[in-house]
Length: 350
Image (cartoon, rainbow, N blue to C red; front, side, top):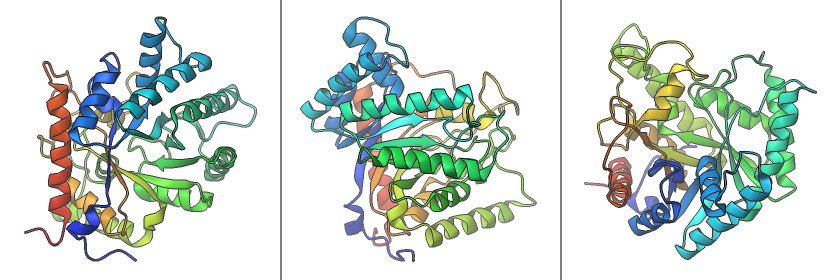
């Protein structure tokens, strides 16, 4: 049952985390970025694989490929030292995509399981026990839900051998599980103790409430009132049916309303919502339009009080990039935005 009251005292249990990919670029100095996050009050990071790869290349003075596992492990050991020096925990390794659904015996299935083993090595080296898996966006797979569930069970069982777990996220451009409900039903039916649901304010609102291909930035509906009622009903269902203990963590970002709208087609392998996700995701209260507070309240009303992680990709309202960003000030602004959001969600906040 959902927790009817969200108190400020209960919100003190929330753990502040920040995705490494959301401060600067992979080419920016990772030690400095980690220092900024620690100084801003974040206690954990999501380690992004591109950041690890860039750090390994820099520290080893050679190009490190995405499957150069020995070098990536050396890089992960270095990242662990950097985090230890700054009292930062590595909460999760992300993003593991396009995992599920490949046909038995296919080249893609063999390669994705090779990647699983490589990422497990990295997890051990960097000191994290959780893997983030995003719902696949492959357009060429003939989706069979039973295959998806069996694949994720197999992954859970392999991770369990190491004492590891996975958190499964609905990516709003996924070809088979773009909504929180579809992802939750998969997590529920996988039925393993070491799988949880990774919720995200952008992915939730971006799949059911907003649409970057439409001039008004909103999903089609007979009326504004019906759209709001439909979304409110979805969030009420989330609060009611998802157990707090099965929520792995909540990621936080807003989104810009894109003008002109994005083309409604796949470009360079990314569907419109995928392109929107990659470049148009600011901090809350920084010019976006998604109902971030509404989504966050719905998650909190489950009784969940866990890891809240900032994951933004802010290339400005035009998606072309921002110049001259002070990363230290940006990290502090992110911490303030999180606090403002939590205050807004508290029932006992004046």
